[in-house]
Image (cartoon, rainbow, N blue to C red; front, side, top):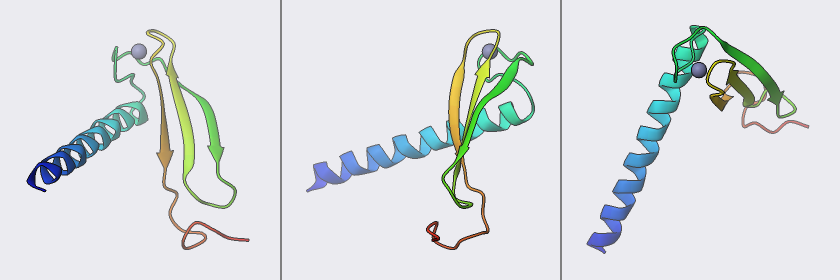
Length: 85
Ligand SMILES: [Zn+2]
């Protein structure tokens, strides 16, 4: 039981760390820089939204170091719990 708690806490911590890192990457990209090579060569390559104003998936790619990452952006507002019609 205790072991299970440690594993659970560990995975939660890893997940939070992952989210934090991802957020930092997104902040860097939003300023126009690549999080990996810090050049101003980041480009928006793909953008898709799931129907109504739910989370949006955007993909960025760097022309210099071929860094690529996709983020889901929560566009708040619109249809309450994400499902409409
Ligand atoms: Zn780069």
